[in-house]
Each structure stands twice: as structure tokens, then as C-alpha cells.
Length: 250
Ligand SMILES: *Cc1c(COP(=O)(O)O)cnc(C)c1O
Image (spheres, helix red, strand yellow):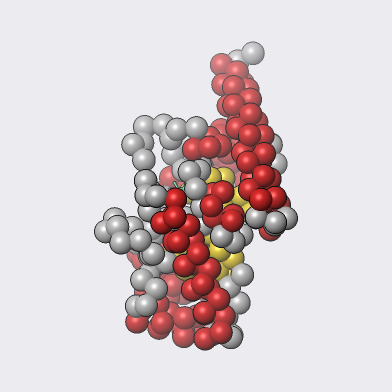
């Protein structure tokens, strides 16, 4: 066996084991919450992992991937295409995006789950329009008070303006909301954050009947069970699938 094939085999075996364990946990979380497994979409967060890891994941039938950097995924995308799997997967941007990189992001990603400003939404809409693409997006909401977190504040005028404007941004398809719960806080605080996202979505459904926001992207490796209990329809799992991110403190 060549070194490369051997490495690919190790990657696939580790991933298969992690995926099986993760699927068991997702299934039991769904059962406990009285929800069907099919209500929860798994986003495999592959940031900082090599294209080989994504190839193995596609072979294990994972279909949706989360990445947080445009350049990093642009490079991997070329490798994925060469390996013949790019057409069998969808890539979602889940990290902060600077408006000046909107055009490149629209080119390489199938969806942007981290729209955190009105300006970014406008730039994405323009860029998508130029290449004739309709881009699914989620609005990232900041529900914790950590300074480091991106996202629109729930009661901000910017969010209100964006919600007003969304129906006229014809190249964007707003599908829902996304949030990142604070790390290392008591469980009830994490839960409170997820619950707040769902309540916010329910409020927007009443206040903005022209919008349809069924997707709630919340929950990561450490807290997806709580997110499923609170109504997550999409969870974003990295470490529990691919292991620790190489060369990256977090
Ligand atoms: C990295 C990341 C994840 C995955 O985190 P894990 O703890 O490794 O599961 C999920 N969502 C976002 C926005 C991320 O940046």
C-alpha cells in the first residue's frame, strides 16, 4: 500500500468510528426530545482538516460540510474536485466573512450560515446576482455577551433593518438563524441561549410574515444534545467527528 493510501485508510477508519458514536448520540438526543432524526441535519465541520478528511467523509455519506475560511476552502475545493467528490457535497461557510471577500465566498461556497451584518448581506446579494446564483443564508445572532463573538445583536436596529430588507435581496434565500453558545458555562446558560434563538425565530415569524426561517443552526461537539432538546434543526460538529484540529489552538 502506498503511504498516501495507508493514511487515507487510517483517516477513514477513525472517522467511521467517530461517526458511528456521534450518530448514536444524535439518535438518543432526538429520542429524548421526542423528535425524528430526520429533523436534524448534521454539518460536518472540517475546518483546519485536510481535503483527504473530507473525501473520507463523503465516502461515509456525509454530505454537508462547514468551513470557516474562504481561502482555505477554495484550495480544498480544487482537491475535492480532483478527487471527484465536490459535486457530491455542499460546503457552508460558518465563520466570519469580511465584506470584501463576499464575491470569492459566493463562488466557492454553496451557502453562508454566518451572515452577521447588513453590509455583508448586500455584498453577498450583489455577488450572487453577478454569477446568477441563488445563495442560501442564515443570519448569525449573538446571544452571549462575549466580546469575541460575531453576530447581530437580537434587538439591534441593524438586525431590524436587515429583516426588512431581506425580501428585496432576491439573490439570497434566507432560511433561518444561527448562533454559537458561550463555551464553558453552566448547562442552563447554554440551554437558555438555544431557547432564546428559537423564541427569536418565532417572534420574527410573526413580525415578518414574508420571511420563512425554518432553520435553527445551533449546537457543536460539546453541546449538540442540548441544542437538539431546544429545537435545533442543524448542528455543526467538528471535533467529535474529525478529532482535534491540527495546528490550531481552537
Ligand atoms: C469550529 C466550529 C464548530 C465546530 O466546533 P466543534 O466544537 O469542533 O464541534 C461549529 N460552529 C462554528 C461556527 C465553528 O466555528
